[in-house]
Image (cartoon, rainbow over all chains, first blue to last red; front, side, top):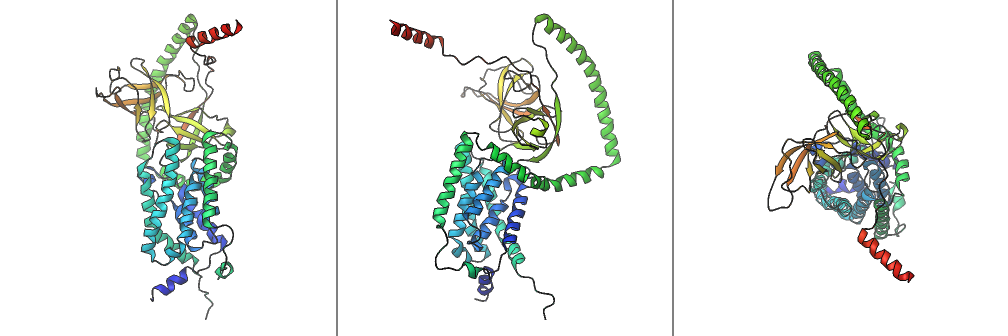
Length: 172
Length: 305
């Protein structure tokens, strides 16, 4: 009961548009870092994580349209087909918005278990397009969704901490 | 709380399901157009220019670390490297002298035989801007683009051999598909006996495969594969790969041949873009087979009667 009270309020924390844009921008930059070898296979999709965070926490601010737009930019940067990332992020954002009330009821660990199938679905959408166009699937690609789900907890804690209003030092 | 603003009895706009359907259809349409046609290339170029500075920004930490590492490299390390390079240079110079003699002879023989002359290809240096972050593809981006007259289809190599091919050109960047990419094929010849074949990428960074080679094909482990230059895309005689392992199983019609690329596909920072390939004579138009043309002639004659 005691632990529930602050958690409910966490979802009501204000989020400025500037902060949402900034967090998405940082996620995109993290995704664009050069990754090699095994790190490439295990690479978490930071953009998907941050999009999912905003879709579950502020579903009226960040929705499917924004997810799609971010996906288009990801497509250009990754030289993938136009619409490939966009499709994956659209599916992800839809999952986040539909389940946002449900996700809010759970604590962080249980949230990760909700996040994982959503991420898996979005990864599957991306891989399915690739399979349709090129005719094969690299299975180690799906490892990334598990790593992303593991990162849900630290990332949520970090973003919540950044969103919490700073105490005024001149306050009495 | 800014949420009070959005707290309404009715949802704004279309429902999430409607939005999902709309954006999914839009994505699928874009996918279809992009996979089949070339209409979206200009839009891609514009967006690529917009995000170019940010992409360079992400590559910056790695570059800085690399530069600092070079700065602190030990003197004796540099000395050994210098000595090694000097030795290599001497050996190369001796070989180059021989090569010049052989080239002169080759030119003379080709003149006598009235064959086309070999040419030297202009090359330009390019640095790897960043490596593809998609596990499905073996691609990288180099920092020369259409501003430096790079064209799609040009060959990219390093000092050891062919690295890949330019597949897409942006104003200041170009995308290089590595020879190890699963969709990439290079027409080659076995250096030892001139056997022609095509080597395919495997999607793995250090593996390529020779497909459709009969079990009895004259190919051995350690054979070097060089470009044949037959298609006019690759200049001839550039080293591509070395045969690593051969499995001849009589149960299958083809031998399983695994090769490894000679070029440091995943190692270097600087690469060479080869340009100015000689124009091959025009490809003859694909005509119908003689049997078909005869049948056509007969039909035409019958009509005339």
